[in-house]
Image 1 (cartoon, rainbow, N blue to C red):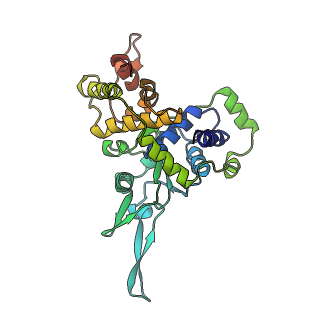
Image 2 (image 1 turned 90 degrees about the vertical axis):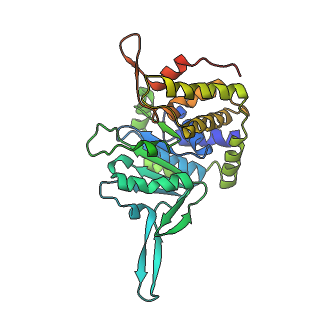
Image 3 (image 1 turned 45 degrees about the vertical axis):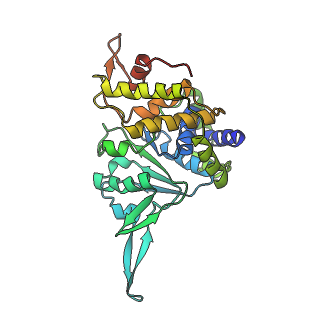
Length: 307
């Protein structure tokens, strides 16, 4: 499977230049059966990354533009009374796809945001008392603009915790930006992306990720990180049990991407910022008077256990 994964990374990298680490994190999130939050300024390639990933894996794709007037029915679907039959007919919403892009999710009201909660956690939606299963695999990629921008509604902690990872794309380096300026239209290039992993291969990868071995000493390391977040005064509230499982699952997926059948501390460290920093609040002053991120704090305070 490693050959297919590397081909997928290369295909996506044709469109998203200079962001291989973020592309690998996005794939690791999908392979771990999680959901991904991408936070960045407008125009940084968040939408293109989601579309390119769906194309490289050959998954059905729907984009939902979250706006202040969006209603839950616009996401989940609704029933319409048909006069000829005397019955209600359900019209499925855009949520019924394998990859869902919830674009600018924090521009919608909390009521509209809540339409995704059951879908993300249970892989199903309940509309008018009837439960409907969502396609497999089901992967939500949500983008959000920084909270400092106008017209945004902050996501509640309960919803943030449902995203396995959060990544930031950031500005491209000068070399990548020059290629962007001289290259073809990115939207046209997405259409030319070759499918690298089919549905059966993706299901097999997701199953194999769960079998990546984590020793007891590695689990001790994960637990030490989680325990520190719950007991240090620099952090307002610590990681939940769901977050600790997310950290382990993400590390297993990263190890699989690296071609290993066991997790090492470096795998935990590679995914730690993406898994932890949207779940906890608080910063610590560094020696130079600046601030260190939560993940830097954890890695500096929690000793690595040889596994």
